[in-house]
Amino acid sequence: MKTKPVKKPTVVSPAAWLKARRTLLRAEKKFTRQQDEINARRRALPWVKVEKDYTFDSPKGRVSLADLFAGHSQLIVQHFMLGPGWDEGCSHCSYMMDHFAPTVPHLGARDVAFAAVSHAPIKEILPFKKRMGWDVNWVSAHGSDFNFDFHVSFTEQELKTGKVYYNYTRQSFPMEEAPGISVFARDAQGTIYHTYSTYGRGVEIIMSTYRLLDMVPKGRDEANDDYGMQWVRYHDEYESAAGA
Figure 1 (cartoon, helix red, strand yellow):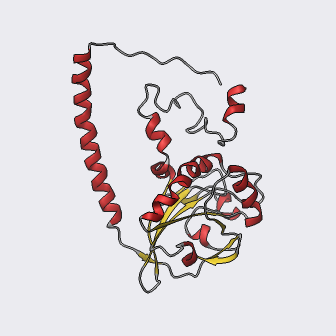
Figure 2: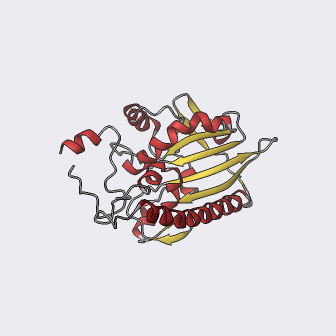
Figure 3: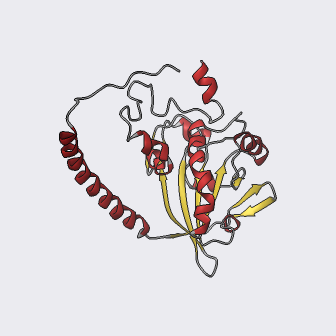
């Protein structure tokens, strides 16, 4: 993969650089405080009781939404784009999972379970999971309303209308599966609540690679791509992409 040289900006003295850096630091601190405020508002959102008894196929058989908590009181679900009959999962969702998977032990230490949920049958999920080497809980919502209720799977009839309900609005969407992250909580009586979901660019919250790219001179370097994340590959394909 050919790389372009870094575009060199104005070169200044260390003193001038320090002045500019301190100006930026003030803006960064303001942004951090704004993030703290938004995070607090996110946690303060009202909850919705989950009325349906959702069940999923897992490698160990049928499991419930409550089972996905694995003894914790909080659960994060990655809505992973892998539809019935697909040869492999979405490369962008795989990019997300590459960031999610290492966090699982740390989430568990803070009373948070993690699970990936896909629309494909479990027998189609497991080979791709093995290929990618992710040691995470991954279940199938095939035959369940779960993906449709959380607006990450769309029926053929919905797609034919030209618009689907995604990211809290009706819009055109090119595929029958979509990405997202949902959060659930369970109280002492075992009642489960939906507390938060994010879609579209909201899922960047887990993509720490983007945070790092945002720091380097080239940034994400996607301006000339046909679409954002066009450069992303499955993590076992970067070497072959570089060779090409």
